[in-house]
Length: 115
Length: 110
Image 1 (cartoon, each protein chain N blue to C red):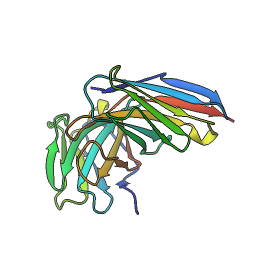
Image 2 (cartoon, chains in turn green, cyan):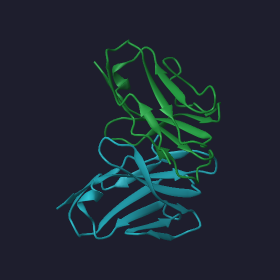
Image 3 (cartoon, chains in turn orange, blue):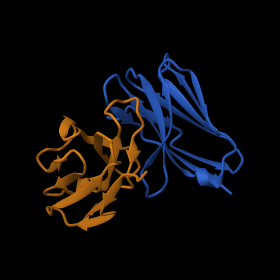
């Protein structure tokens, strides 16, 4: 089966600019996650979708971050405006269902650098 | 906040040796998972152990779970250079959320 697809792989922008990341999960996976991984740390959940509804966005900085999954398949994460502290790898993952006892399948991420 | 804390933060061993990584977690879980991350890549699921299990094996991997001590260990036997990666534990609670630790960086020297 095809894995989780993410693009772009790398992005360099200046602070206060905007950026968008795209994710296409594994076919048939109802649940989609966006994580932020800062260098040297583990992934931190930003937002979780079940089909096209939001399950958890408690750690999403909503003043600058937004995400959508309009048709319950692919998803876009946007940052506007970007801050230096947003430099990180943004990982997308998917699972069959949104329960913690299922493995999550990760894409290779988008590495964001803020100048 | 991080659920799990891995120990050690970094580990360097010779090919053929065994590698042991430990994970401690803070809150109640119903399962604990281990993931591997190669440099520049996403995380790959390795193994899941449920809270009512004490030990689980998968190929060269052996995972233990001690819920009374809120700790888990991952043992990789007969390590290979290809095992060089970062390893993360993630605790799953009774709902939907996985919370990842900060990882152990493993270097296997040829």
